[in-house]
Image (cartoon, rainbow, N blue to C red; front, side, top):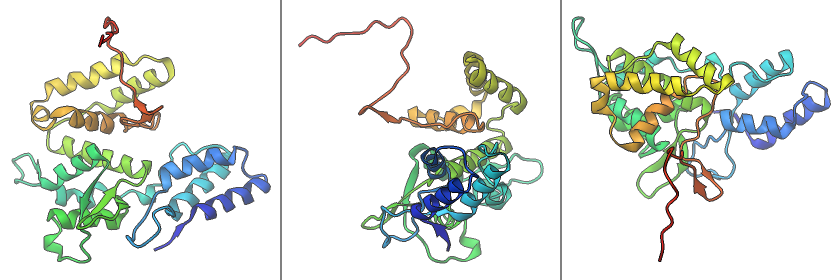
Length: 273
């Protein structure tokens, strides 16, 4: 297994900056690389403070950057995308040509991982092909694919997390395709793209959320799957995360607190002792 350390990445940025091939601030680029390609830890015995970067992804970023000395239009290399078809039979149950496929327990596990940012599991070192659908084996497969990495070792199970923004986008894509194939939920992606662009460039956000929530209300199957705040949050993360225009930060702590939208017309309440 090969990866770059933070020192390796900084050394490359310094070298290419001195060679005149990088015009952006190095720390600015380092933050992007860290967010999209970093945070890997694959051994519970490794130093958790020294996490690795996916070498293929970092080299892809630099190669694309050098073409125009600007950020790549697509920050995800096609070569690192794990095709939905490779995971499909592990998360979808076929019911014959005349019946709609249904999601199985591993699809629920994918949703749980998105909702919580990770999961806890034992890492299985080997398993027969026919046992791939077992949940523990499925989670281990996600770990070996790089879709999960070690957050911290536990006494019995290992706490695993989604390592970076690239992997988050892959999860979003799997859930979107799974919902569409099982007739749970689907969007007109051309319309979605136009509405997302209007929100990003013109500040017109209402139409996008009206469209998504309207489609949510129309889906009877989705109502059975979306329960509670975390489920709704994960669902919105999936569909807002389909665009490269935004990076989603669910419940990001700011100044030791969390930001919530202010409901119009609600007057601030002062609690007297």
